[in-house]
Length: 288
Ligand code: NDP
Image (cartoon, rainbow, N blue to C red; front, side, top):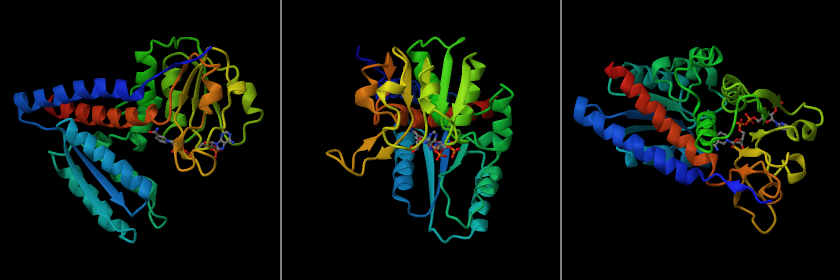
């Protein structure tokens, strides 16, 4: 059996078209353009790429974007002052600070400084709490994108065994909350989990969000399962050295799974798409 591939690029393109249409409509009806402000501190190459992609996606969808870049040694107070300024600017609907921040920053304090109603990443404690209560204001973009993929593929969720590998605040934990809200039976695995394969083999829906290249192999997957690969890793050896791969060993997994996301071209584009969706939603709320 060979799994059907969930094409994140195609689904993203479809959703982004709808978002662009809504943004254009908002401009005509209310004279408002959704606006996302992105703050980047330092010169981390991966972060630079992510920020560039986010800004480009905004522009392509007809959103306004503000990109504020600081050198790695900037004083946190300067960044906090910028966040306060963006919080107070009614033309800005979404603010995100690209993570990771340099070591001299208290990342939590920076995320808490963003006004919760503009926190389009959904990382502010108030928004995390709202998600936990089942009443989210902004759903963190990566798990939101995964839910959209499951919805688009009509994957049955009620009563399904969902296993998430990884318990980070930005992927694993919110993913667990969202699947739980859809009545999955959720198991969250992490670095201290014993016998990982025992858990993954029970999964009707398996989400890998670890950051370890190809760690989930075909023999760890239940036949017919839906496999969502969030991981983004650069291969450092072999014939594909330098190329991206996921946490799932795609070649062996696709022979067992029923549905599978590739890397690249799976969850990655959906994450940026849902960032746009959150920004648009934030702008829409200001019109009410
Ligand atoms: P973190 O490093 O914050 O979390 C990784 C998680 O994996 C931790 O909970 C850790 O456990 C767990 N883990 C580590 N080793 C093992 C192991 N051997 N077995 C089981 N669990 C393990 O990563 P993120 O959640 O931020 O990101 C995960 C991956 O997803 C990365 O590759 C990242 O690049 C990618 N990513 C992709 C996005 C996209 O748009 N596609 C967006 C965000 C992230 P413990 O808590 O015990 O340390």
